[in-house]
Amino acid sequence: MFWEIKNADPAPSTLASLRLGDEAIVLRIAKACSGPPRRRLLDLGLTPGARIRAELRSPGGDPTGYRVRGAVVALRREQAAQILVEPVAPVGTDTAGPLSEECQ
Image (tube, rainbow, N blue to C red):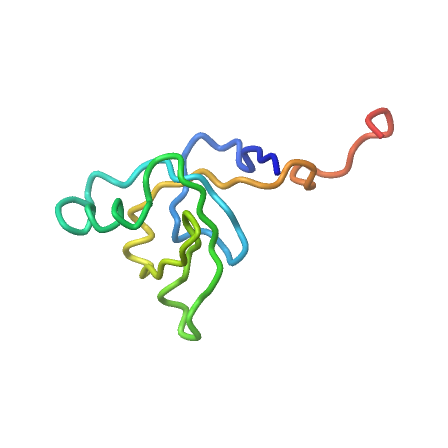
C-alpha cells in the first residue's frame, strides 16, 4: 500500500499524540532522551524511517501498545513523547476534503 504525508505542518508531532489506529514514520528520538533509555528505544526498532502504528491502550490510558517492525511494544506516555514522528495516511483517504467536480 502506498502512503503519503498526512500533515503538512513542518513541526513534527510525537508518538504520544497518535490516536489508536494512526500510523506514523519515526523521524528521530529527542536529544533529551540519552543513555540506556535511548538505547532501549533503538533496540526496540524505533529508528528513523520505521513505520509505527498505535494499536492498544490500557484501560487507564497508559501505556500504549505500538506495532513497529512486526512486534507490539508498550511505551508509557513520557517515553512516547520523546519520539518525534510524521503522521501518515493511506493514499486515497480523504485528508483534504471532497474532490472538486473536475477531479472526479
